[in-house]
Image (cartoon, rainbow, N blue to C red; front, side, top):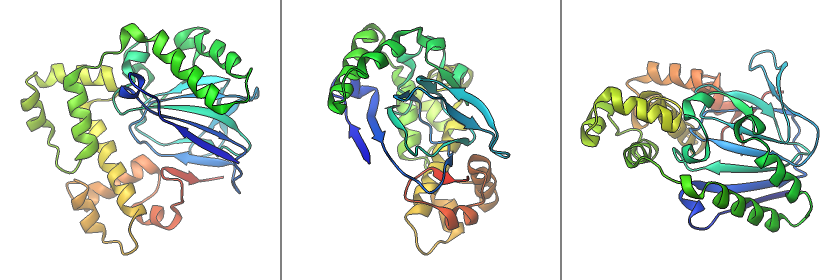
Length: 272
């Protein structure tokens, strides 16, 4: 079993959090529910067979993905293979930093998984074929890093106001007030909302809800003696009822149900 992270160097590390390569992982289950975390990813599958996305309720196959695909910011969970026997590389962008690598506004890929050839033509498929020529995982990482830097060298720009807002929401979701933050930024609410939506994929209010949900997930995962009222307050929810409703929307489970089935893989819940 191999699970290998790789952290790209400057300038790519301004935009990409890390690459992860995994191969030969074994799970007792075959299907996971992946929870919204505010991230955008590109996934490279080194096997030729399709990877499926499943209906959240029925677990029936609803989409097949081949070779390379992109996954946008999610406002609802997605049901995917557990990774058993897969050989894949995942490019995980820093929060709010994926836009320069896409040829369209990020809201167009919200809650969507799209084959790479529909986004970038054959470029990612071609680099995948070159990566398959070597078994050296570090060489594959370096090839992908060089490819991303060379292909997108002229486009690596992020709106500083959007970057500031994403950082505030990610680091202090319980403290952020959208109206006050908008006043600090200086744009009209309508203009900033549209700018944020195109750069990140969702509007600021929706992204803040995802970040508060993620803080709740981390808090639950790290707690043994759980006080639900305290968690709701510390994670920035208006009250416990809003906390429960938002948590169920993003995960499909109540907080109590999630606490009973949490796993060692944060944001991944076995469902089949």
